Image (cartoon, rainbow, N blue to C red; front, side, top):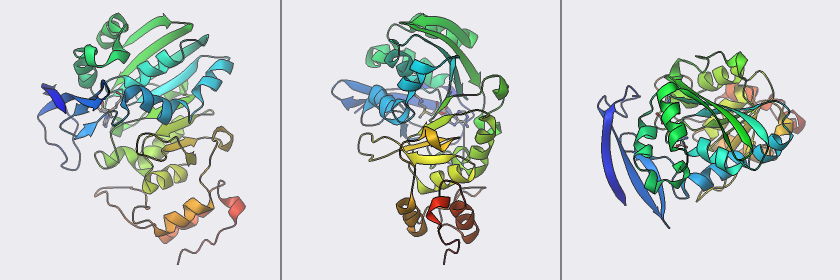
Length: 310
Ligand SMILES: C[S@@+](CC[C@H](N)C(=O)[O-])C[C@H]1O[C@@H](n2cnc3c(N)ncnc32)[C@H](O)[C@@H]1O
């Protein structure tokens, strides 16, 4: 059920003719059992489908990246990049879920627009994860940064507004290399530029220390792009009807279930395995050269696979 469709101004986001310039429309959708999520009508994307913001954040991001364990042992501020701030579901649930841990969080949220968050704030009654954060959100949306405590956590939260297709390094990434990245800028279908090999290669270059990345997508093409960009890649958590999502890292020791030989066998058969590189972004079988690079990835070297695809 969709309630409350609102137009909240003009957004510049547009790709591949999926949308044309015009007012961005958001709605609150009911997911049942008193759960709700924000939906972008223009992109046709519900931000937290099926399970809602809290369970999605836990299953897709916190558990696969072992945030709790890493936060408990962190010596320095633990830095998280929140790519696709949206309605702030992931980032506020991150704070809520770990409030019992005495630690410093250095949070950086990236988005091209504050529209979904401002819409969500107007519907706080349906989105309980926002409750209690109203005055913090007021400062954050007005000033672009806020410092506060929540439970035992002390938190610095920064906003980076801009189009990520221009790169991830608007603010100097070297001054805040992340420990963990929550990657949630819509989907490969809706904005392929941010799920392409060039995009993941740019992002990988910004991760100058040990870091993990988790995302909702389990697309073969996205996983191959992450691997060729220099990440180690594994199975992320199950969520809703999805049996698995994806977790990646700059070091293999940070991932529990690395993709293996069986996954490579699927890559050979998949009709959507070649990473997206340039417009027009198309699905396709893996090319010979790509396969050769893939089997040489350190993650797959132990399997001594044949570099010849056909
Ligand atoms: C699915 S929503 C994110 C939901 C959010 N993580 C949450 O928990 O509420 C995707 C977000 O990515 C942002 N986005 C999409 N393309 C972008 C781009 N090229 N640059 C910056 N942000 C982008 C959208 O504006 C939108 O807010």
